[in-house]
Length: 268
Ligand SMILES: [Zn+2]
Image (tube, rainbow, N blue to C red):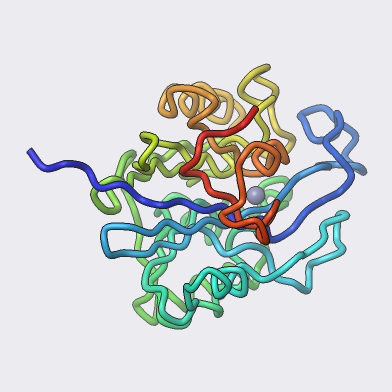
């Protein structure tokens, strides 16, 4: 029996929204004030001779919209920990909302992966519905199509896919049609990068629906799925909760609140 490899997993907090969460973040809130108080992350996974970047963040020209402040390009943050974006070969996309698939050009030698359901969603009838289009940008969709024709976009089609030994993608859906969560084996056990299957821990704890979704039932089911797969809050990494920033230690003191070591236990 071979041992499952372990990986280092770092969260890169590349943007923030200083106005903290209020009722408008959840279903039924004031749509003119929708979605407040999020932190924005990409991730990098290294180990077993490989490096995977997870999501690419929103484009810096969107900084300022919705109170979001872009802090630093994720590729720039990677360079500070010795990873050149131009040498990255694998970028895993959890879904195609604008804050996860901007900056694709920063990884000129990478192959990108996304779930087939997500690609169908952003290029088909789903996008004729304004509420489903809300967090997508046409330029990102066009860019993904370009990557497809350049043979640099691959699709996952199963509910659970092994990306590499010790790294698994789980199709959760709900928030977006092809929303994925990523399970990664670390030295402290398996952790779940829930991405936007869980934006904020309150969604799971109180089964409180986030305001943007494709399928409400699947999104709420997804909250239960994510906590079950993770096996506890200390192994569940929400996609946008400022608590992640508060709980996880920086990789080095100069990366306080910017590059977080998810392989360490959270201090909460
Ligand atoms: Zn997001």
